[in-house]
Image (cartoon, rainbow, N blue to C red; front, side, top):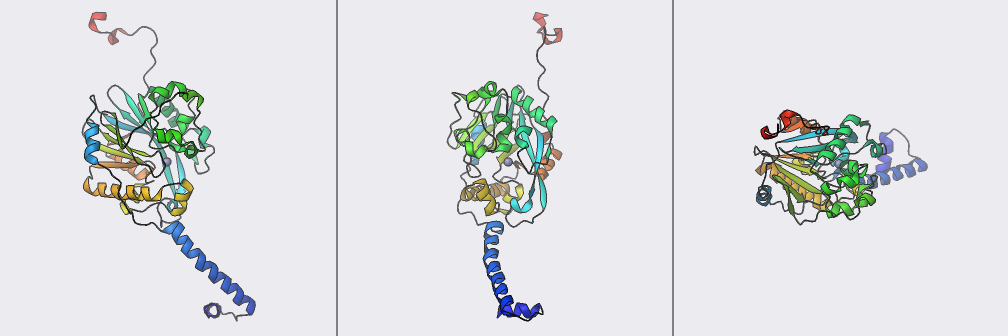
Length: 338
Ligand SMILES: [Zn+2]
């Protein structure tokens, strides 16, 4: 009857053949619509909360003696172009850029890198990377050489990429703070491949829930988006706080709405959907209870701009220290050495 009604609405007399086609169309729509809803539009409610103990994190940030970071700088090495529907379940199929960023914590006497982006060697294999900034990539490479420590929020190509392609990986080994979970998840790094020979006898970082990396800097284990995902809490010397959440959510919008990526992206990425939903719920609560903590998703251009405009993030890495050549200038010597 419905098929006949459709036919009448279309002003066509239903022949047996048209009725058959009509039924096929209806059955197809009846099957596809719920599947589309489930795979693309639906985001279930979180069944649990992520155990984020903010008091413990803040205490750890104060546990190591020394100067806290003075500033957070960044370089954007490129940008993916995705569809919004791939980032937040139910959002439209509209193209949107996703910046790929490496961060530099600037201490008085040292720097620490959070994420390294990727280099052209691996970016060339990435279909959704239409733009690449070679100058920024070179600055990340130099910053890796100059850094005291290098951490990544997780082991995916756009975060670990520049480590995997580093020609001096063996020299970087002592400062590389890959966690045991990140180091073990070689499949999750693809298409990036972490060479093992330069990392022979490398000891990855083992910790339970939290780890004090440096004064004011705390790693927070948060698997879900990948087995090796972790957040990086930073308290600056002036007291301002940031929370680098990697790709728990691609953008802040997931946290504001408490909505996951669509299920088909969860499957493509290989996420633990329950774990990510719990993290989104907890981060949503954190936004309400502690709005002073700046949550920084890895690929949110609007957050990057907002925090840069506010002076919390600074565009551009510090230039690497000039290599020492020849005897030091007289001004560089202590008075009793002149
Ligand atoms: Zn990413």
